[in-house]
Every structure is written in C-alpha cells, then in structure tokens.
Image (cartoon, rainbow, N blue to C red):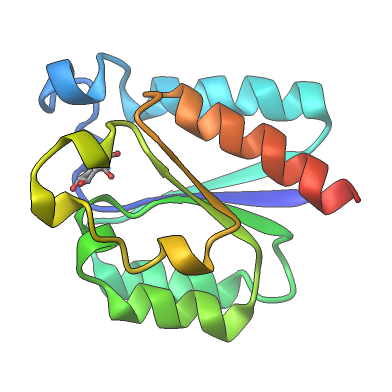
Amino acid sequence: MKILVLNGPNLNMLGKREPNIYGRLSLADLEDNINTLAKNLGVEVEFFQSNYEGAIVEKIHQAFGRIDGIIINPGAFTHTSIAIRDAFLSVNIPFVEVHLSNIFSRESFRHKSYLSDIAQGVVSGLKEYSYLCALNYLVELLKH
Ligand code: DQA
C-alpha cells in the first residue's frame, strides 16, 4: 500500500513559522514521525511539499494508478483552491485533509475549505498528530 503525504505553501517553514500556532517540529521532523508510523503499519509513504498550486495539482494527477491514498495539508490553498479540489475529483483517490492548527478557532476566512466535503475526513488542530491520525485511518480504510 502506498500513501502520498502532500504539504502546501509555507509548510517548508515549519519549526520557524509561528511556532505558537504550528508547533516546533520542522517538516523533516514531521516526515520522520510519519515514516516511523508508516513502517509500523507496514505501508510505504511518499512526501511532497510545494509552494505552488500547479505543482500540487500535477502531483495529484501523477498519483493516479500509483497511489492508494493521500494525506494533504493544503495550507492556505485550503481556503482558495478550486483547482486542487478538481484534481482530487479527477483522480478519485481517497484522501484526508489535515491541519496542524484548529482552523475553526481562527480567523473566519480559514473556516471555509474547498476540500472538506469531498475528503474522507478532516483532522484539524492536533498538530503533528493530525497527520498520524489520518495515516492510521487511511490504512484501515484501504485494508477493508
Ligand atoms: C494550516 C492552516 C491554514 O489556514 C494555513 O494557511 C496554513 C496551515 C494548518 O496546518 O493549520 O498554512 O493548513
């Protein structure tokens, strides 16, 4: 089983960026933690981060026929991107939307997501555990 973990804009700045909101882990630390869980679950994970909307759209297209499930933190594109929504609808790969922060306890412009209604589920506000919960769930979902 192969899972793709996608991170959108500014998530390469994790650890340095607003640590009170996003935590102190770097993106590399976060990916290490996800890798450790993936090994325990016996699944393969691939990571991709980009600050560019089109690069994320292309990565979702390239997942077609190759990747079983996707975990995505779309960053600010959550609240703006019909293109990423349409990419998921094009490939029809099950995905979980994750956020480090609780987007519903923040500014009202963060309450709207273009992905939530087509995601298997959304995990928001559990810092790095949002990704780990999503991985546990996706693996269960794909096994059955
Ligand atoms: C985020 C929340 C978004 O609103 C924000 O633009 C991000 C990160 C999160 O992980 O909490 O870049 O997706």
